[in-house]
Image (cartoon, rainbow over all chains, first blue to last red; front, side, top):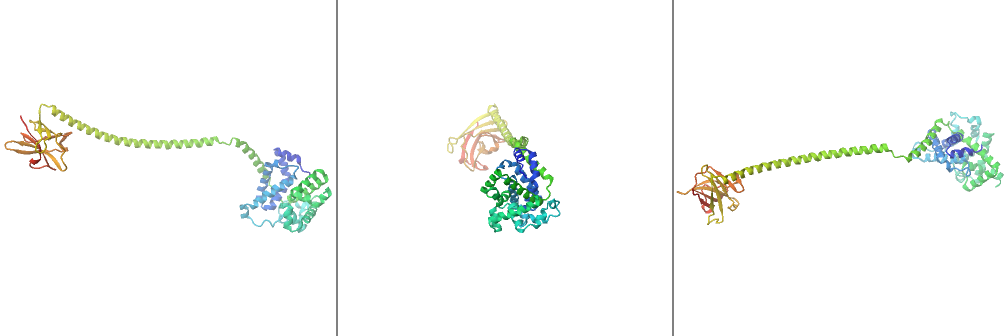
Length: 177
Length: 264
């Protein structure tokens, strides 16, 4: 998927319509990232709104030349959600979230109305190697740096990189055919 | 790294995740611009991850977008309204309320002050009225004395001081023989010592018979140092003696201050 640079520039110029299109393209994935961190639909919903309000207000701080727009969104979303988990109110209401990952969410969310099975991801993640789950959870969903992930998983950086690539490749085959 | 190496390195995956260090990000960034195959690879990685995250997401509520839209529109509005954020109606209202309260307080204080000053004035009036009536009495008495002095019915006698006791002393008697009224002016008498009073006597000469006419006291004082005596027997002479408080039956001759004979 090519990055919609024209829409991004229009949004940066204050175009609500462009912002709306970008929201449609990215909001669900960003919501998934936030939900995988806070594990509460209501909180995730509020944070999703916060994230996109931040995106609108700080649109000018993104530059097409500095990285992927999606990566920029990811960083805002993960930071916002992690900030929330560090808040007192959140700590009081929930405990030990860090052990839950995206696969746990998927396996426990059969009742949720989603298109997961049509694209085969659920099947994929069900079969996903535990090592892949951990790597993708830390690097993608939790926003660890490569050094942090390498340290946490106690594997060399090179191994981490190749394993991550292999895992995402498998994902790609499932998703994109 | 050439494009193939870069693609195989796993750096592109980390780049999309946002897990790559800054310097390596720059390298990937440059490669994306220079090599379409690198950009394509990045897009495929991004799309896979995007889908993965979407599968994790519960259904997004449509009202979320409405809430975002409201928030950014309100933000724009508040930015505009910040310029004229001074809420004049509220300020005016508060100012009016404060002024009003202040006005009431001021009026209450004013009323209180006036009440106080009315009380003070009333008291002053009472005092003045008393003083006025005192002065009127004084005037009436003085007028009476003046009448006496001017009247043809009164004769003036001077009672000279007794050489033995008080040579400097004297008293004046204004006597109405017909009505037996006497005014005695004691200006020429020294102030009596503590515990002593002057007593006035009418005297018959043959034989010498003193009769007390009364004490010189504030009770019968008419004016400044002028005392009125009535109802005393016909006198041929008047004498004034210094007596113990309350007076005596008989004059103490050793304390006879003035004595004068009346010549008709």
